[in-house]
Image (tube, rainbow, N blue to C red):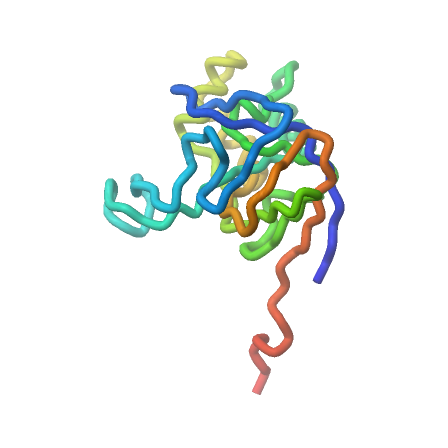
Length: 188
């Protein structure tokens, strides 16, 4: 398994109406998500685009979200804006640095923190229309600028594997998921 070391730049939680999150010095993660976060819970309601009918309950695969400082800078450049896109403004719980192509980490990848907290990646977090409208308001660009620029750079979402504290300045050890050899298909 490939190992990558990165840094937690900032942590965020909250349930603001505009989907932004408030920066904290640390956050507490429990098995059902992050203390004080609107996305906390084992279950969430489906929305348009889910496999199940809109409004029906399903397993919450979005207990946390993370973005890359480097990818946010690339998005800002592609949007042609001067100021940064902040992790808080895109509703991220974690802002990480030093993890190449964070948004492309595969399902099953583990993020481990000094406290013993562990997060498991479920999927890429695609840029949505609503977040595009929020970024348009913040940066004076078109509502499609963010979704276009953020394609495959919007970050990741997942579930909590082990509870603990995550603080700004923590190291994060990433174990990139690889299909085990015993599970790989043979060419026969």
